[in-house]
Structure formats: structure tokens, C-alpha cells
Image (tube, rainbow, N blue to C red; front, side):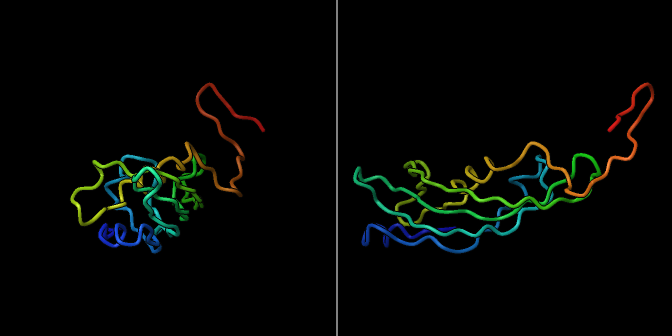
Length: 133
């Protein structure tokens, strides 16, 4: 998601709404199979200290592997973001790419493990061990 900083400097506040697709290489070494397009609703503004601040709500869902059955599980998430954008994120003085900032907040929502709601453990056992319910 690219934002025009000229509009921000002119108005001191601009809406940040739309969908963002996270590239697969961001999460390929994680337990995530896919991520839905993220829905972003919020605003970007210049705060009282002359810093660029992002306030938004991110909604989406992860498709992950069930820790027991290895089937796909949909895990919905919502993240509320209130973050000051550092100057190093501003690659030039015309545009601001929010993808990395959004990803930093989305990755915090990734669960360690997920299990499918209706998974049944009938009998799990191996050589010298057994799980009883």
C-alpha cells in the first residue's frame, strides 16, 4: 500500500482504506499456508510532534495447518495499529510504502499452533507410548 506524502503534508490527514496482499515470500518459512487479502481501515496523519502516525484496523485470516490432523484451518484475526512511522521507512519524500509496517503488526497475530474445531483424537499411539483421552 503506497501513500502519497504530498497529500498528507497538504491535508495533515489522509484515509488509509483498501486491501493489501502480503507477498508469499514474507511468510514462506512460517506455518502459514496462505493469508487472505488484508482489509485496512484507518488514517495516516501528522501528529503534534510532526511525526507521521498510522492508526488503523487490519482484518484478515490465515490458512494454517492443524497441529493434530494436518488439515487446513482458517484462523481469523483483527489487529488495531497505532504506530509512528520512522523516517527510515520513508524511502523518498514523495511516497510511503506501508507494506512492511502492516506486516510487522500482522505477524504478531500469528498463533503458535492451531487445531481444527471438530478434530477427534480416536487413538494416537506409537512405539512405547499412547495418548488416552
